[in-house]
Image (cartoon, helix red, strand yellow):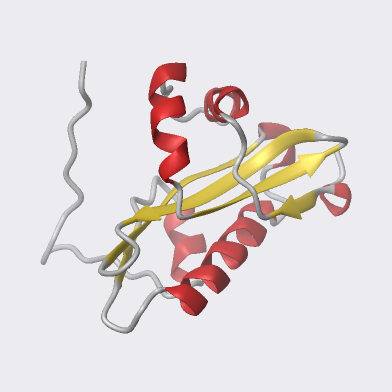
Length: 138
């Protein structure tokens, strides 16, 4: 697959594509019900399309004023390593810089080497001052 043919659109994918792409990219699965409830709360999102198929995504969630969280950055495995994650992050970063007010905090949880990509957009590790903590509802 050729990353040059991939189109970025300012629209987050629907619940079915969201669940499929998370699984394809090796991310923790989300139920269709959870996706249908959560995705309408997206503040801003983008999709990558190749021949009409969703092959990448990323979105911003939060309260729209004080806190913004970058989530669901995913690229289809066959297209990883071709700069598409950077395209997604650039779009999200542009939107955040245009829409988040001064003093807002933008955060994300970086898995593995993805932290190097996020550092290019100004994200810094906060440990030991703070650590990401979570739990998953069973």
